[in-house]
Amino acid sequence: MVQVRSIFLSDIHLGTRACQANRLLGFMKEYSAEYVYLLGDIVDLWAMNRGAVFWTPAQNTVVQKLLRRARHGDKIFFIPGNHDEAVREYAGTSFGDVVVVNEMVHTAADGRRYLLLHGDEFDQVTRYHRWVAILGDKSYDMLVRLNVYLSWLRRTLRRPGYWSLAGYAKRKIKTAVSFIFKFEDSVMHHVRERKLDGAICGHIHWPAMKDMDGLTYMNCGDWVDSCTAIIEHLDGRMELVVWNMHHEPVVQP
Image (cartoon, rainbow, N blue to C red):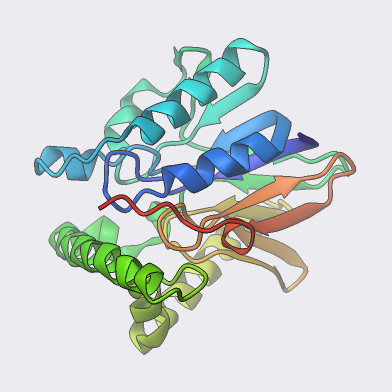
């Protein structure tokens, strides 16, 4: 295993058909870390509330491996998102040595300080128009279901690589791109007010690592479409890992 200082994961969406748990297990086998930060939407309680639970052995293994890491001394922190917001009521407590917090500041090995959060508090739709967010979530789930059959067809035709219909649609919609930029600006405005060096978040399923007026914006992406994570190397250097580049997906029909 590659030893790194920290791993940042978000938007795993355990409990849904969209969750790429097998890919995440492959990533977890590759990296060992002192700190593991789970930045929200780890378990999709929205899906469970509407009776759309899809829980696989691979998803169960993800939970078991995280708990095992915590028992063996890894420092694991869980910052709930909007899809698992019910867990926010338990901030300050621990579940199986996993500490729940609503946000926190991570000091990297090079001394830089990063705000860790899910990010839904900077999403105006999620905050003030919840019904729109739920409608979008259902539409997204429909695209994911279609993607299962498209992936089967691509394998049948021997087309290499993983292709996400939901991710493609999101990239092609200009309003979605505009929303992403507004989201990033809002997060970094808050970071500047807090006099920090950057932010690491999730929520929008759009992996990124970039400089914004001298501050560093990082988004973990997700384990639905992009299969990405942020890692901190032992010297404090941050890296965006795209796991799609390494392994073929295991599609569960």
